[in-house]
Length: 408
Image 1: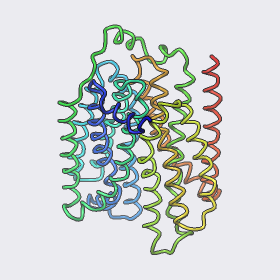
Image 2 (image 1 turned 30 degrees about the horizontal axis):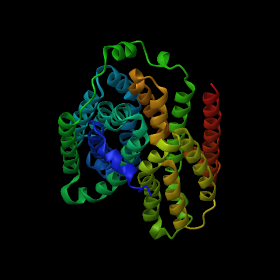
Image 3 (image 1 turned 90 degrees about the horizontal axis):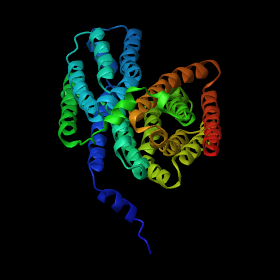
Image 4 (image 1 turned 45 degrees about the vertical axis):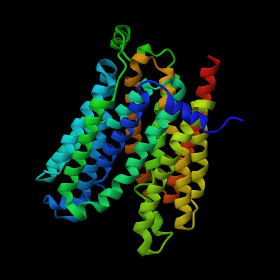
């Protein structure tokens, strides 16, 4: 009788540098995401420390400073993907880790709020370690292990999103806000050293380089799978972020006033926690039964789980449903990258995965904006139902595209 542990042993025992590359990328992605998100709990305090005194202005500048990094990251992700295809994926990771280490350290030395926003823009411009890791892992991992490897990487990214705000809530009170940024920069510098000396990238043939120089989209024979995955990536982030503007007010209707902040924080973390737990398992399952099948099922399950979220009567119900939704959404990121990897020529994998990252960042922008508008003008329950419709349409659209590609 075959032991269920054998597949894991085979993965760990595979020869070649791809497994070591994966663990370095997981560590690097985790540390850089922690650095990007740890300022959430104390950002308004730092803005005030930099000379902004009016309450409304503090809130406004905090929003601008936080969103600045993701804005420039969305704009530059396709460029870094293209450069990774052309000059090497490891080189882009070295650039991103060194750039983030410098940017995070400089943020801790800002003297006014304009410098803070400018340095946050710089962090997004120079960063992109997590997206670069996705490109390298997708390209270097054997295709039969792609879903599992990208799932492990996705778990590291989700864990960074979960741990970052927790660290940001603890460290500043003990070592100070500026020292927290300097420490984050030092940790990312360790990532830079590990990336430089531990990652091994397979050399690309002159034929691959020549093919890449002819362009991205022109080399893709069937563009439908790529377009479907770009749309799915945006939908994932819209579903994740659409409740951000309304969550505190929505929770206030369900729990006592003294518990609102705590429960709202747990609700926000529950989705990321569920996704971190399920990513590697769903990615491994997708390697066996098909990545597109997991994408469709995850979208459908998320759509179903959004309906009861609109009608919960207590905080623990919302926490449980968001956790279950995280378990479902955790399979999307590795499978999106895997479908692109299997349907894109090797020469332009990085370019197309860069477009995928930009689509996800776009969803991070659209989600809160749409959620705030719908919640404010139609009602908070409508946010969950509208997101449900979008996810269901995404599932149906992927079924149609998958069948069309299969027939073709």
